[in-house]
Image (tube, rainbow, N blue to C red; front, side, top):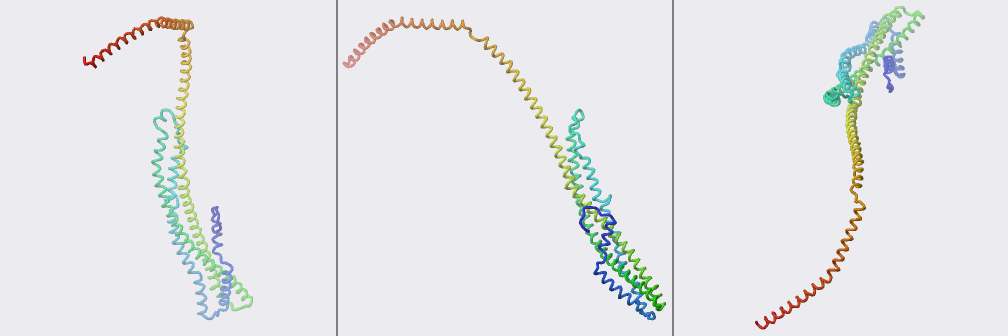
Length: 379
């Protein structure tokens, strides 16, 4: 079968199987050669020879019998094995149950169904965010167990498909052999029928014609019909196996999709929900901070306005008057004049005082000199 992403219909699968088991031209040529040889031996039969008749009848009786028996046994085994293997992928199978349980868990944890901004009494009493993440933590272990179970089921499905593909190939080989035997029988049927008509035209031995018609052509045609029926049964078996294999592959892809996409998407959704909630908290804090800053700026501005006016008012009220300043300058100048007068009057007195101190110093020096002389004389 060529590569395709489309799901094949049963008719397409059957047509593909028929094409695969159909003999190729080289095989058809060899079958035609064998058919011509067999028919020539049948038509040259000595009707009076019991041994020759028995040989031909035995060949017709055993024609395709082994292939039919093998196909029947294989179909009986496949009916049991396919029935058991297909249970893995049906509604009661491990993988199907795991996918259904995972779907339930994910649906219950859908963040879009949670009102994270719930306010009022219930919002304060039952924090929706805390409750959601608690539920996620509990479900996380459940989801992990489900994923583990899905992995085991996936491995089982792969092993089942390996077994099924081996059995399917064996059944294809038997079907291909059946197809060749049907082709050979049909070629012999057509050739014998044509030979009988020609023999009738030539008025050959009617007993021989009757023997070939009733004892050879009739059982041969019956055997071809039996082979065709077994071919159809084999085709149905191959189709049944193909359906199970494809269903298993779809379930395997479902497991991979659930692990790689669905579970990852859930974790991303939870992470995003958490981030959005944290952003909301930060935004609220920023809003409160902005409100506090605005209040502070407004309060400061109001204080500056009031205090600035008070400062100007107070500076004007406590300013020194011009009259006071004039009086102060007048007092300072008077004081300076008094100091100048005092200095002028004090100068003569200071000179007299200095003169008196000098006289006292001279007298003292004379007294000291006398004392020093007395010491030298030993007095």
